[in-house]
Image 1 (cartoon, rainbow, N blue to C red):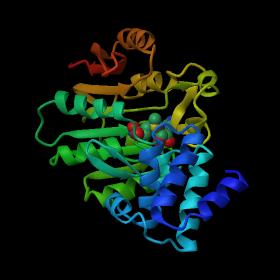
Image 2: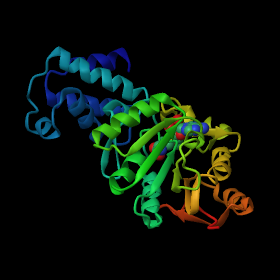
Image 3: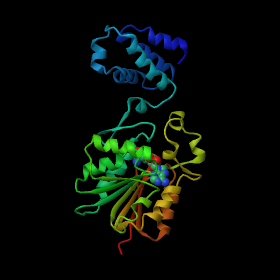
Image 4: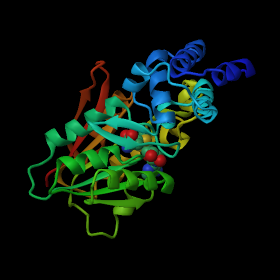
Length: 299
Ligand SMILES: C[S@@+](CC[C@H](N)C(=O)[O-])C[C@H]1O[C@@H](n2cnc3c(N)ncnc32)[C@H](O)[C@@H]1O
């Protein structure tokens, strides 16, 4: 924000003037939904509902109130994602706390939850694992939908796990065991060999070269380790195809989210593996093959 823009925000004496000035500055910074974001930022900074912003446009602001809005606006105009500023993102109808320790949950990942619930083998007390849990959105949505289930949620990042545990508390979820480590390695030594009905994962799947081309809002603010897998992008899927096998029950499923153009090589790898009897993909609403599902042979 330029000094002039900061001064303009500081000079707003009423709510109505502030809403208009914030909207103007967001719009000038190229924010698409400037009108909507202006009221959300002010609602968050001042705990002032959108309704009150509308019905009390003449309400006078203190200097401290203007400064709070200005601080958030400064970060948004610099490109920080709105969800990190507001501290939340909705996923599967639940509100998750998010900060720079975790990827902001994406709408397309809800398909991972839907497909897991649709295909869960009919077992009284199923065991599931969520690999690369991040904010915990997938594990927590599943735990809420499967009250008899036992879940293990794994992440390499202890900071992400702290955020995920706070989200579990927020939603009253107690059936998830949170584990730090590399992919499925933390499942070892827990008597889970051939016991897990579903291993679900939204692993990092951006290649190192594609990462440099991501929008700054993603590249500069979301954790690189949540996005980048390696030179190809499918490295972690391939590792999971190998390492999931000892833990999957016969007929158990490995369900993974993937990126545009990754289905061909992943189908090939899964079919060549020998540990899976069927491999299939599911498209998202945009028609992109988004999920790969491999069924463990049932011997
Ligand atoms: C794409 S994010 C997915 C987060 C969340 N499940 C979601 O769908 O929003 C991938 C997550 O995997 C974690 N991760 C990266 N490499 C990992 C590894 N080798 N083992 C376990 N977790 C890993 C990252 O820290 C990140 O939280």
